[in-house]
Image 1 (cartoon, rainbow, N blue to C red):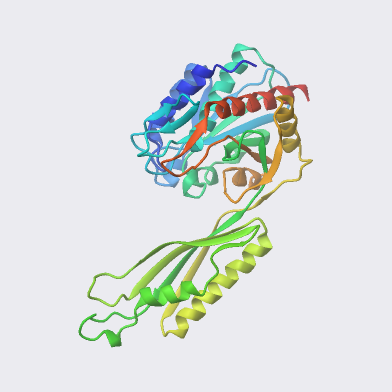
Image 2: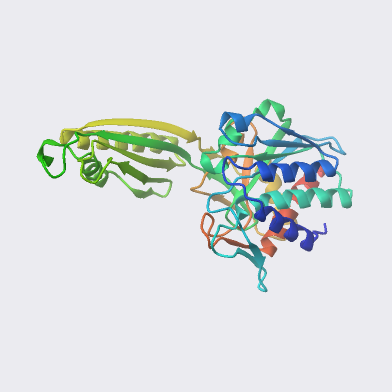
Length: 374
């Protein structure tokens, strides 16, 4: 299998330049759709954009098989985090791709998009036999997997899937990833003039801070984490703040541990707030479920054989991050997340190597080729 290095690198650079922050993926959708339709492929867009107040839905690309076999689904997401507008991606003499440094690069997850398009081109050029294939390009993954959550998986005929969205090097195969509970905690105190009668008020910000100090935070154990991410409160400098809102999360690969931690967080927050005479309100939403695949799962074994076939070392791993693979598995499509080699994601120092881009493309092609043999 001959990867056209220049072509796939230039494709990534072009994708990186197209701004696609969450809920604003429309320009990238247009580019991908045009590119795919020029290749003669059927591309359909769903209504997820309207459901999440974005300007684009998910794209489903259907590639007819040349041999019989169970359909395969490959997925990558179109959106990026901010700052992702005005990206200037460059290839260094060391073979590393970086941005100019004042934006993210967008390797998360435009590596996946570029690899899948290049894989299709090689598939056609070399006339590699393959079963039916689907590409699912999702929106708003960075905001809680919203695009995948709003995709109707009854439209898919796939029996197994692969998401190209793990930061580990190519050859990594993610078997386990955590469920995530998102929290919103509120403190209701009492407003008062900060200079005339502060003693009659109840400072909601201070009370929230005292409650947070009593709560678990950071790494709980090797499977479980929690964090406070956002705090807002008050209306003016000279008013004792009446209300404070705290946003946080908890994750665990173990559903039992996540339930126990969630209960502990809510109980501690509520008890500490009420001790200080204020009222507490809490809300929990599970953004996505955990994944726990067995090594003998057919989707896992096919990926392992493909990686071995290329002379790479397969690594069966767990991760603390989420991906659309959580939603695919919950929809009944056994799905693993594959390492693509992106580093320092969600920062302006994000980078990856040309070698990684080629390797993940080769892994995709090897999976397709070996599925046809099987």
